[in-house]
Image 1 (cartoon, helix red, strand yellow):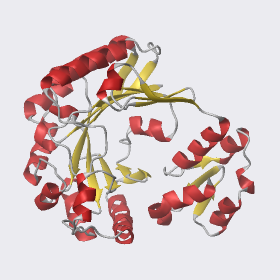
Image 2 (image 1 turned 135 degrees about the vertical axis):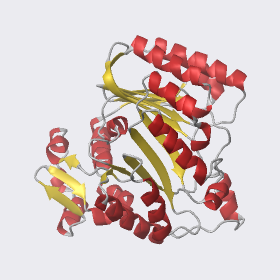
Image 3 (image 1 turned 60 degrees about the vertical axis):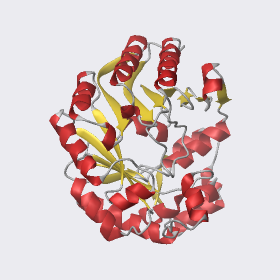
Image 4 (image 1 turned 45 degrees about the vertical axis):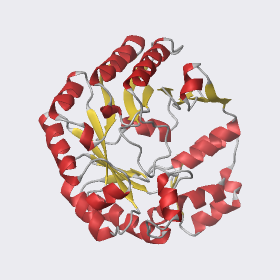
Length: 363
């Protein structure tokens, strides 16, 4: 079945580490954008497909008028065959949530809440440009529960200044019984961000990568002891609460993205909308690509090795590539860096911290 992604590119302010297509914009631009977005959904040539996941991401979808969220869901349900009990997620920031808004989201069918927490240390939050504080996180979690949300996810950043395992463990401990899903991402310093400038001017000092990887490894073990199984490098869930929509990205299922810079994969064709308003409003794409067999093979290996389940050797061979003849692949198997279980190949969890290096060598 199909997944639908909707990009809301608006935020109350841009975080210091953010390199996504997100903007602080006036209500006139927001209104124009939503109207164009609704037409984009209405005119999609793939209408009628069954849909089992909708993900409203950003940006900060929870910062725009809630009536726009309702209109977006109505447009999707009018155009596509959204199944009963489909997973419908909205991304949010704690400071842009209140009880009334959360109850409204539940009434219109949203059943999964993804909250960008990043840290529960107020000094760290201020340093990376977040608008919320620790108190607002727990207020939002309490209101989400009152509103009937059972499927709640929180994002955390690893590698912030003065962060270590003890501090992060304390944060996770305080939310682990309130959520079903956790995402723990390594902080990336992207070109052109405020964070990059802060580092260059020595206004901030971040722990080195090796130290952050060691913290990550300890977090994985801690979360597993408390019922959160890692199913993708950065994602952990209690049984039955894996993010169905994000799994579509990692297992190459069909999904269609609407909105600025949104990406799509449909029957081995990839495309992305323009990432600036001028070109997006003209209906331009930043790229359109029909995937070759080689590209499909690369994607299966790369995405599969990010996930706990790995990838299928038979699937790769069926596509015309005998991976058994790959020297680096065989070396990694001998060294137990890769693990083979029947037809499946996955990365030894001990080496998840250097997965990009392993994948690059195989490809």
